[in-house]
Image 1 (cartoon, rainbow, N blue to C red):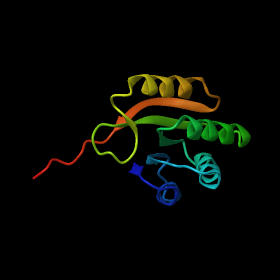
Image 2: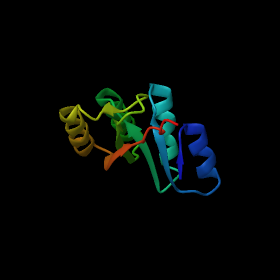
Image 3: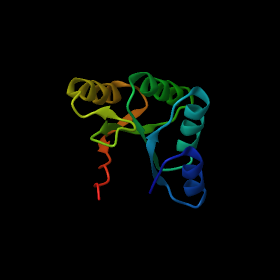
Length: 119
């Protein structure tokens, strides 16, 4: 099940859903700590990432809490809200490799959202 905030993910986990995707970046030490803590209550909690420093922070917190985090590298293919722009292929590959290399991180692949068609 997909949601956009930690509080939404927590409600889903509390309702018994054990595989949740937060399709938004979770940034900042308190939110990252809460994210990792929540991951210990479910089978898999996956989060979108688009920044190497944020990915390293998630990994470090996961190591500290002895947890495993799943990540998807978020691509910007036209919505222009978040994600690595699709044309920055070197950065996309670097993020995917970093997600593969960091401890307590499981790289799940890439994600993107299609922009709404103009009517």
